[in-house]
Each structure stands twice: as structure tokens, then as C-alpha cells.
Amino acid sequence: MRGVNADTSSATAPAAPSLRGRLAVPAGVMAAVLGAFAYVGAVDPNRPGHYPVCPLYRLTGLYCPGCGGLRSAHAFVHGDFLAALRDNAAGVVAYLAFAVVWTVWVVRAARGRSVRIELRSVPMWTLGALLLVFTVVRNLPFADWLHP
Image (cartoon, rainbow, N blue to C red):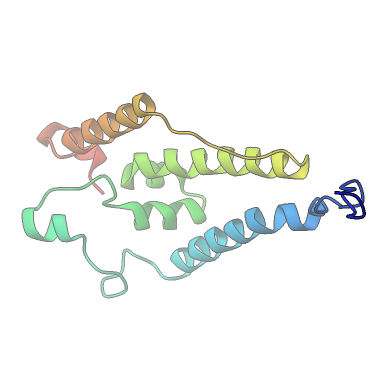
């Protein structure tokens, strides 16, 4: 096919996003998380009427893995880390895990590397099993120190 411009070298590849563009999503996620923590820090979950009661606790009297999470976040925001652990130890571990994952995300995004977290079945089953053990243990009579 002569006469047709088949030169593809003139086609330009899409421009790589700027540093600002690469950090926009992690910054937005952090802004949302900080906003949520600020709200929970300002509106005390220990005072009734501000937040709904856990449906599982209301129906069965059993603590789910998330029970006490708002009280834990409130204590965490106010620097009372022992109370945060007492209210929901799994929540505190989740806050710290989020901080680590978010930091890795920001560093990789700033360097222009892709961020892909692949949760395979073994780690997911392990996490599920740990949350199940946490839930069972916190509902046993001798583990009142895990009750929110």
C-alpha cells in the first residue's frame, strides 16, 4: 500500500501522569479517612444517640469483630491507645495496617510504579480465621478485657 502513511513513529504515547496526578487518589483516600476519624473524634460514640447499635449485638448480645470500633477510633484520635486496644484490638491493628499499606502506596505512586495488592486465598483465609478467633474469644466469659 504505497501512498498511505504507515509511519507509526509519529504517534505519541500517552504522557505519563505528573507527580500530582499520581498522588491524587492516595491523597483523596487519606483525606476521606482523616475526615472520618475527625468526625468520630469530635462526636463521642460513648454518648448514646449518635451512632446506631450493632445489629448482631442488639439481636444476640454477642460482640462482632467490629463492635467497639467507633469507640476505639475515638480513643485512638484522642491518644488513649490502651483504651483503643481495649475497645477493639483488631481495629487498632487495622488502623496500623492501613497506615503501612497507604505509605507503601504513596511511595510507589511517587516513583511512578504501579500499586497492585493481590490477596491470595491463603492470606484471606488466615485473616478470616484470625477474625473468627478474635470474635469467639472476645465473647467468652474470661475475656472481658476484650469487650468494648
